Image (cartoon, rainbow, N blue to C red; front, top):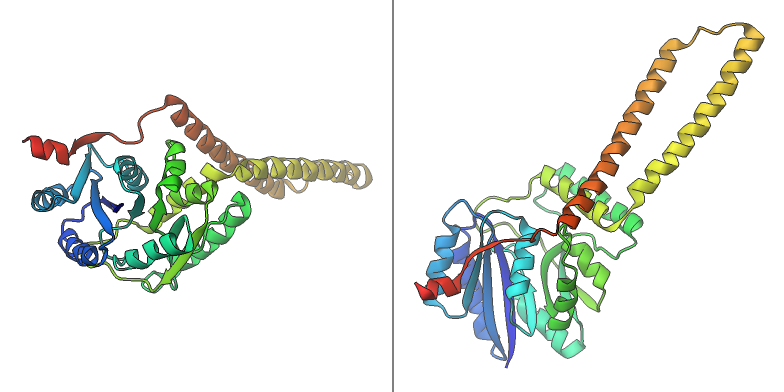
Length: 314
């Protein structure tokens, strides 16, 4: 029998985990052709998430877990789960049931019967999101498609199932600054997209605030595009050209009209504006430098504190 590994990153999900486990067990009964392996990744939770996972692991042999030494972020947690997955097919989904477990049946069917390497999911609508977050998300996906030239789908979620071959390609990209949707698009492979209506969390609160979304967007842009650096260079050339025109204008105006001192308020505004632009692009350059610095240090993407093997040994 083929094995399906389902990676579930968890951060402060103690209330949602019992609901998730009950639903995934219902799906297991329908997946008679597959051995199921569930890998919970505790991403440094501050509540009783790890204790709940341990209780589940004691009762069910198909449940494994990886507990990280601190909160490394969702991207690192998913990577940790991928590294520890042993299945022929590997899925990843959230524990809050916004990703319907029953879709796993159709996802595996498309891979097995229609030859897809991956089946991923996207939301049909943004129901439940704030107006500003929704507008920002739409603008972000349009922008990132243009500047990265990658096929990153609007509304794409982390929920997907992929073959072992595709996962191995994803694992080869062991970069410290990770943006998985970009990595999936970069490695390619034949992917089918499933649409479904946005679901509410079964319990707990969302960990993805608007500002975290902004940081995530910046991570994506700087990880897969050097366009901001090119933009800074192009604007630098443009401002040099504009300043040259202004210099010629001032010289002619002084020689013809004899008025060398007028216009200083507008000049101050221009100086402040240009200084702001310079600082802005220095910040962009600093962002790229910081990423280069972190990559060259070659620090581990995550640190494992304990696994289900430690539970068995005790």
